[in-house]
Image (cartoon, rainbow, N blue to C red):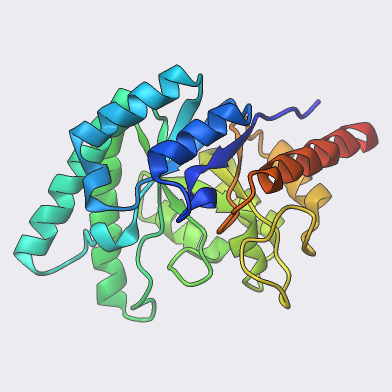
Length: 266
């Protein structure tokens, strides 16, 4: 029987909640696990890591992963000062992850230059460096499939594997829906390296990151693929611009019902 934990991303409550308050809201809503999206430079400091640690302990929320803000991590930069700052911030983020006992980091990677071999090579090299630093710290760096970033197709996942880039993967249902790629094909390509899952619905005529059940995604096919690759991590609800926390409750109820139907039909 497939019975994953259901969690939530603090990004769902951005910008109406400060990150630490979004983590508190996750606990108050009864979510056992969360992903924390670090939004500003201040949030990549030891002091903020201490605040998050106090919140997650006070409200009994396990932090599965941290989501990196891409603007602060141009690890492929050829400008020495920018590269040094990005690497230093990355190492500080690993310290925060360890304090929170987070298992993973979620990262988008490059969002341009996909057709420039030299640029992609630099990205793969920088990602290898970051993934090795993360692994040494006991954390998995996960590249997320994003419709407007590098990782969008199974072929790109295979490229990372062929170049021995030691990353895990974050699967995002909405981002998969926004591309021509079959979501199940992405999951199968990620296979045992799949470490984190983001859930939001997709409708080509609707807003982005819809509540679960408000779009056209085939949830049974997604659950079947996750079950088939043996994914045992949490399903993190990652909506956008949530103003009423009841929306998060409704999405949790929806995916719980979909899991029950999947189990009953398997």
